[in-house]
Image 1 (spheres, rainbow, N blue to C red):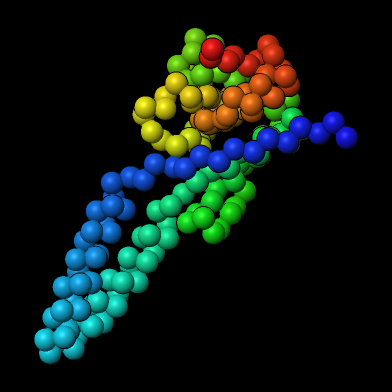
Image 2: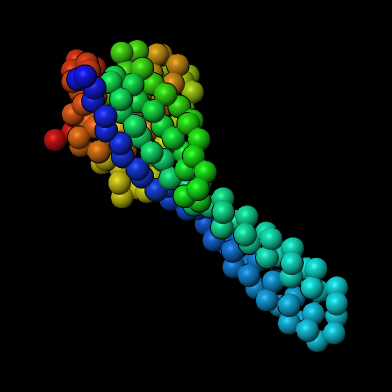
Length: 166
């Protein structure tokens, strides 16, 4: 009937560790393959293990978050390597206490509380002005990067609890 449905996907920033692992495993694999061709058969197994490790590093390093807003509920899905999707959180927005840009003065009253912190944002520091913090049910502090359309929909749920940066 009057159901609101909004989805937004954001890619997670890759850390430096998977990049270093990709280079090290690639060099190790190629070097072992070359040594294996020169006559040392043991290096074929090292090259195979390096290729297997490289596959898993590539597979696990591509992470995206998808935000789904469906009728006063916000779902967060984690997508790994653009293949595997898993629902990692759902928030009934009628139970939110505050939703504001990161660093906003309305969040200062929650700074002293020990909240469970979750970061479902891209992780890029240049996107800090797009990050919003959801204080949920007095137990969780969730960092998100919603779209403008999603912000408007969340604002309509509870205008007193939501602060939107303009």
